[in-house]
Amino acid sequence: MENSSLTFDQPLPNDEQKGLRARGVLQESEVAVRVGDLLIAVDSLSGARRPISSQDVVVNEGRRQVLRG
Image (cartoon, rainbow, N blue to C red):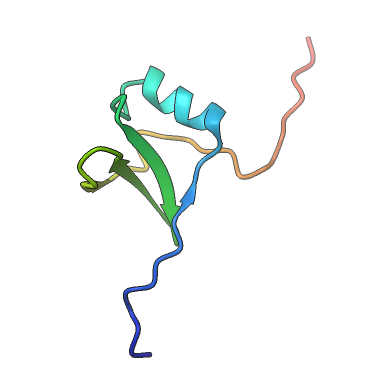
């Protein structure tokens, strides 16, 4: 394919963004996006991108758990 510049960034849900900020993984000006199987922090002011380590985050993939007490 000639057009390798196409990317399909999918922002994480708002609750996961807030959780990443609360744990210090994301700065206030950053958003987390999924690019393929990678998580990337994108600075909304400068456009700078950096990988988010899988050790820093556990992301829900649509699965819900019920805790019973």
